[in-house]
Amino acid sequence: MNGLNNSQDDGNVVDKPGQTNENARRLALAVGFDQVFELVKRSAEESLGLHRAGLTLVLGDITNDIGAYHGMGSNSIVMNRNIMKIVWRSTRSRAKRNAYVYMILLHEYLHSLGFADEAQVRSLSKKISDRFLGVGHIVSEMATKPLDQFFPMLPQYAAFRDKGQYETVHRFDSSSTPYIR
View (cartoon, helix red, strand yellow):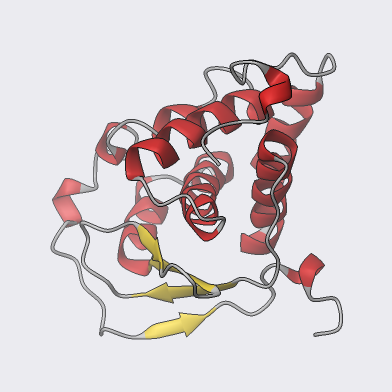
C-alpha cells in the first residue's frame, strides 16, 4: 500500500484522450457530496485498485486547524463545517467548491483505505488528482498547498465557530448502499 498500481510505473499514466477533461467536467458539474464522492472513489480505485464501501459523511464543528478526519477503523469521515462555510463564502463557483470537497474527501478516503502517513496521503492525493483530473487541476494544487492560497478569506474567519454540533449527511456513498433510500 505504498503507492499507485505498480503496473503504472511511477503513477504517470496516460489516459484515453479527453478522459481527464471529462472527469474534470463531471467534478465541476457535480451536485452534492454524493456525486463528488463517487468521483473520489472511482479515481482512487482506478489509481490504486482499492475500494471501500459504506462510509458516512458527518459535518461537524471542529477546530479550524483540521479540515476533516477519519478515525482509523471507523466508517465515517468528519468534515469541518466551519471551514466549508468559509469556502462557500469565499466563492460562488460550484467548480471551486467541488474541488475543495473532492480534495478533502479524497484525502480522508485514502486514510479510510489504510494509508496513515500524512505526507504519503498528500502525495497520493496529488498523483491521483493529476491522473484523474489532469495535471495542474486545482485539486492537485490543493492537495499539497495551504488552503488560504485558494481561499484568501480563510484566515480572516479562522476564529469562526458554530455551536459544536454534528450533522450526518444523508445520501452519501449511495452506490455502496442501494438498499437504503
